[in-house]
Image 1 (cartoon, rainbow, N blue to C red):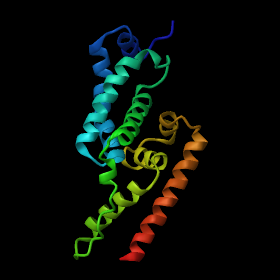
Image 2 (image 1 turned 120 degrees about the vertical axis):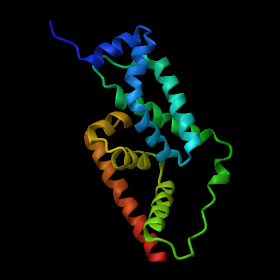
Image 3 (image 1 turned 180 degrees about the vertical axis):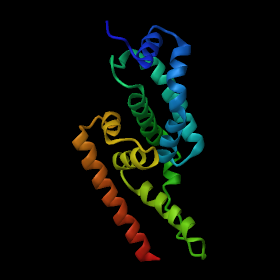
Image 4 (image 1 turned 180 degrees about the horizontal axis):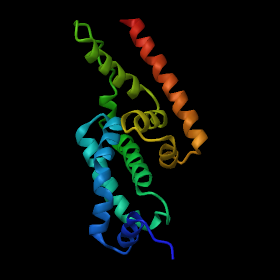
Length: 178
């Protein structure tokens, strides 16, 4: 008889309605899920709302988690989808789409670079921004990025490479304007 991992036992218990088991599975993921949502939404309150909604959806959709699948990529995919939904449904997102004025005051180079990085990320399409946030902000391996995005490992590598190159070009263009 093969022994099951503690995670597999907790998933089975959670699927049977054990809220404590679900909480034990989800709790270690919430910090990274919040960072993912912040990276995608650029709004702390919206990120909190998205993670909370994703946790609720994960509880509802727990029976869909395939046996032997890992909880982390599955939950992060739900968080990413919730962020996409939040971006589409916020009526005020049009107001926030206004391009910020260029920085004209002399400031610390690191602050300017951080602002430019956030502006460049916001300008990218959601799929590219997602792989960048998963890889660079959350330090996830390509295997997990593939599971979260529904791509093959090779597809995730390709999207990450293209997104990184696009971000690099955007950052270089910003430096040229200063």
